[in-house]
Figure (cartoon, rainbow, N blue to C red):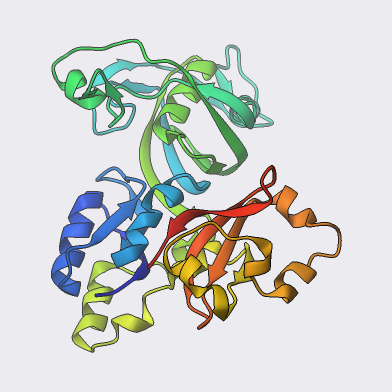
Length: 319
């Protein structure tokens, strides 16, 4: 059984679960999960967890993500993308910078100003066509029944937006955002603020944390590697997700503590791991997670530091 991660390029037309199903056939193992659903028409980075790395699924879903989105101005749909039913169409005049007219509706400067106004901490109402649940039912199930309920706005963060192209009625932009962000809903809100409505026309996820589209592999590529018995070359070690965390190595005489997933006292870990911090464990205050290795040098867990008890507590075990 393979344990680790594969950076998959999900192609349009596949659901995220389609990718998992195909990989189960290619890799001949059942224990596979994906991190962060992509809509069927969307494409790009889909991190897939194998074996014991499936414990990372929820962890990776919480990571920041980056997308390139093509937005259609002047069209509003029930799904907030072009796959849905059109609710409203708006007619507007478009004038690029430097031109003039009697009644300009939208200019390049308007588009830039409105899009940039969403950078920062904002509240976003999620779409009805989503997998979020209300009283045990997924919202998209209610939406398909013609039922629309009030959704509570959620706190999200837009770290950066860069407009790539304006080709009316389409605007293409790159956005880096926090977990829980719906780019469809971002398009909806941009359109509302411009006064003409908008929906998402196409979406490509270009990054999840430090996993980027440049290194993503299509299912056909993975299948080819499988036929050549080279899957090991594709699988990233689970520890790669935590490569920016400080490492702790458990001493041989305390091996049973890490083997059983017990809390760890400082005297249980290699002295030089603690000595790397010369300022009273300053890094503990900055980041509370640690990669933990057993006496054989095998990555086995992620622990957090409990400052009140001066002890390391298990967060995720991978053995």
